Length: 203
Image (cartoon, rainbow, N blue to C red; front, side, top):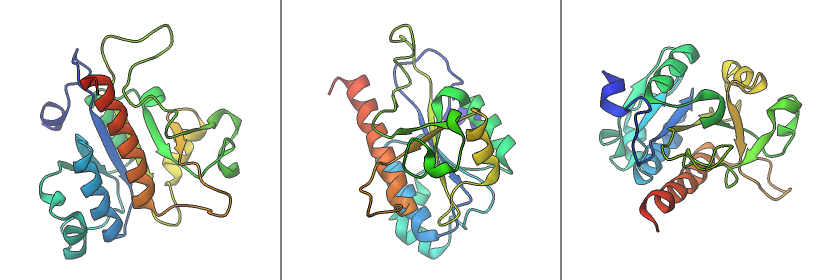
């Protein structure tokens, strides 16, 4: 049972669980690199949406430097299934699930005004610090990285538009339009890991 194996469904606990969702990422080099980063950052599990590449292809395995065989990998059959799995892990979709988008508060006009994107370093990845003071228990967090080129799938874009999940971006200088998907995901994961380690280990 994936719920029992990887998450505790929001029970009272002192450590944070972070999940990585790959939304149809098809480049094996990028997928392997993100597996490697996820393992280094203590990600609980990687959830793979339809369209993701073969995680055991030679290029993916080489790029992951063996992380493919150490990181829990969960395949889901669509967006609804993905939401169900993450909710079961204890992720609150409307506050603790972030999809990586293009830079800017207007998200490059991809989304409407209610879908303002937060910088990755402004997000509270510890799952604490909600309105009204800091909670004594944490909520699990998730970040979604889209496919190279097209980015997020239409289902995930719509979830951002309607406020079902949130948007996050990596600020860049104007000369750069976008980051490689694996670089973007890794930057976000390491900031999340830094915050979690600082919060829960007092470092």
